[in-house]
Image 1 (tube, rainbow, N blue to C red):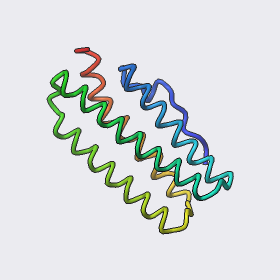
Image 2: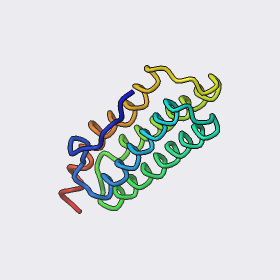
Image 3: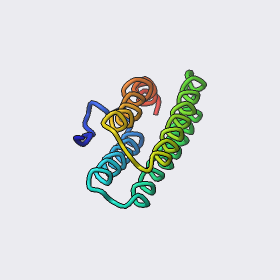
Image 4: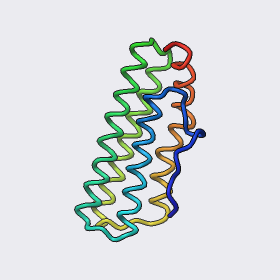
Length: 133
């Protein structure tokens, strides 16, 4: 699996959100490398846990900004965050139940899980926030 590269395509034009997204991409790549390189299951589990925990923190960060700047679509955006965390947690449980086995489809799922939210939902929010911050 090739690494995901953060570039301007993933930029939402709000520096502090872009910094969070860069960190999430780094953690996703670290997790993928840890699996590819045969790191211990405990290490891989710790990296996956960190990825999910950082995602939860990042979502709260976005939600704080949406509240501060009165983003009109906050309810829908927060609902998407909840769904993504539920999906991530379900993925984590499956990963643990499968003994840390990862298929190409699993890697693609994780990449899509992160990039789709950025490219669709966060772009809309970022464009709005960039105009009011």
